[in-house]
Length: 276
Image (cartoon, rainbow, N blue to C red; front, top):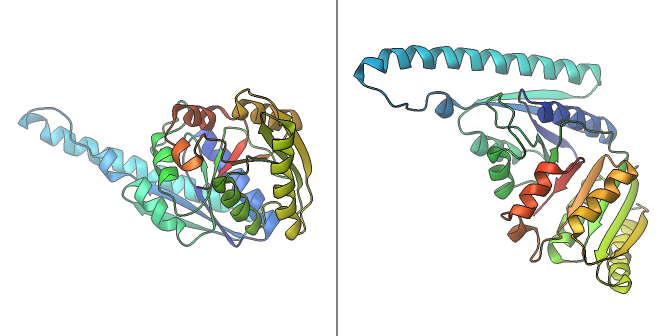
């Protein structure tokens, strides 16, 4: 991993995203770029009213844009100070336009996106998963780490692996980025039988071993909701990062649009790596 893109916003989970991005950059010797997006379309969206309100709307829009510019400048300045304090090579992108489109475009020059789950680039915390984050996730050219409000150092990682093709792809990019290196890695597989879970664990362990990473395997034979079991394990282990390798009925690509996955992304207490 050489470069991390982190979303800058004035929300609790965005602060967690910046903290985690800097930790990853320091651990892996990567550069980190903070991206702030001024959503002009949102700030100047048409509002109902007669001709007499046009001047008032114009003045209000100017005030909103000025305030948003100042907020972005503050975020940029604070982020660069964080980079200096952590001795991490840092840069910033201050962009204007649609946050979804701008982040997707900027991601093409980076290995990984780190974003707070409440980030909408409007400086207004949302309850659960922000629609902006959901849309970036659905069309992202790079894997994402979605963070909650509070993050931990990613020195202990849980990989949830179900043996599906989406899971194998997620494990590959996770491993190639070096995210499993120099960390305590636990691989969990949930299946209806111990044999099926063990089979998945052997394959995941073998792939990690190709890159010199060892892991602690954990087979769970259960018909309960795998996501809930995995989150419970991650919480019990005090993991700083959870990699979800599929665990949708037809894999992550289909599951991303489901309410269960949205709930998982909204409620997971651990930073969550997703690639689809």
